[in-house]
Image (cartoon, one colour):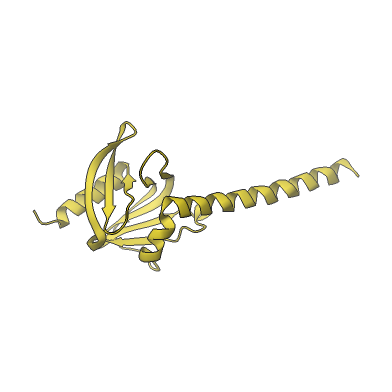
Length: 149
C-alpha cells in the first residue's frame, strides 16, 4: 500500500466515526434534554412572527446536567408565543418549536450557576427553559405585559 491510500483509508474511517458520533450526540441531547418531548406538542411548521434573537442560548432541564444550547438557537418572541429553532448543523431530532403563551405557566428571573436567567415554566412539562441575555429579557417583558395583574 502507498502512503496516500493509507491516509485516505484513515480519513474515511475518521469521517464515518465522526458522523456517527455527531448523530448520536444530537439525538442524545434531544431525547434526554426534553426537546423531543416538546416537539411532540409544539412542533412548528411555519415561521413565527415577532422579534428574533439569533445565536441565543438556552438550557433545558433541571439539576446539574441540563441540555445546554449555547449560541445555537434562534428565539422569536411574539404577541402569541415563543418560537425556538436550532441551527441547521445541530437540527437532527430538533425540529422548530412554537410555544403559545397560553401554554406558559410562569416566567420569572432566577439565579442558576452564579448567573441570572429567565426561567420559563410550561403547563404539563416538568423541565424549565432557562434563557439568558436579550432573548430572555424580551420573553419576560412580553409575558409580563400579557399577564393580567
